[in-house]
Image (cartoon, rainbow over all chains, first blue to last red; front, side, top):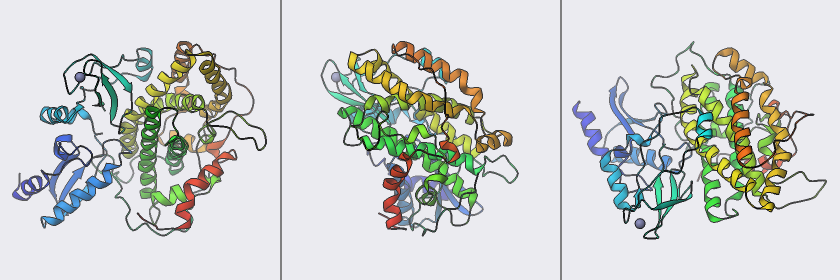
Length: 166
Length: 290
Ligand SMILES: [Zn+2]
């Protein structure tokens, strides 16, 4: 890694998700790449959900952080390969759990949609992030944001968010 | 198909940077989907996103209020990516906002199904409360189509479109799952919920005929290699729909007669009102940012 690329990674490391301030953009897999190109340094970010309202804020945060550090770099948004929760590190998943959000399971292998409907998956077993019980039930497939489902723990009675596999 | 001629509009000073799809920019000479095809996909998403967003703050229960807000955000996000791609390819001073806010109703290429209000057919000046069975039934019928469309377009040689499809597919699976679950709950629920789900199905099903007759834009997309022939998806769609309706104890209506032509730009009166609300602010204050 060139020194400038290393410097950019280090500069951007403290940036966290605007809605989940305990995980960094790098840990979430939103900050994808830093490279030196013929036109200068390029920082690549990728959106989570297409309609995620935090993406504009994230792009602004990255640009402001670079400007503050006096680093001239272009910020590029790239769609492919599509963001997936599988990119989240185990460390990030543990931070989510400690924050009260059940971390995402690994995505299921892609099956054709006809099979997807015929064998509609039973709701996943999700452990309560507070007491660890797997005696939980889904309340709604869409929670406080598109990326989360709403669950409740049937043992400690706490409602909680589950970060859905994407 | 008329070329898209966005009306005069000032640039937004704070335009989000348009994302690029594949790891390399689309090279000259590679396959690119026709603009009208991108707009057909985008208009579908923005119109249903706008329609479903009407539930925001008025949902039948809190969880569904939130769910419909999130589904709408997904649709509007997908529409933005498609409009941004179309705007980039059109070049000049075209932006996603010009495409969304400064085209008139007859320039929209969405299915008529998606612009209908959340209630059954009404006569004259009659008004009705929104009916959630109508909302769910429409989301199910369209959602079942879109998982198939995005599955096919994920493999499109148009790398930018394929990238949008790969993301949209992940969201469309959740949308379909959500709508199918509720349709089964309504159909196999109380007498009242069953009756309303069946009425919504009887009202909406004829509009799905529009899915299966390709428009000029769809034919051009298939000819270019970038699009999918909708007729090839019909058997799989029938499978999803029939299985779910059986589980929901609902009866699939017999369909015959007039086939709507929203994707050709010939719409019901409902689209004009929807666009009036969606476009009014941008047209009253062109270039406004917040
Ligand atoms: Zn618990």
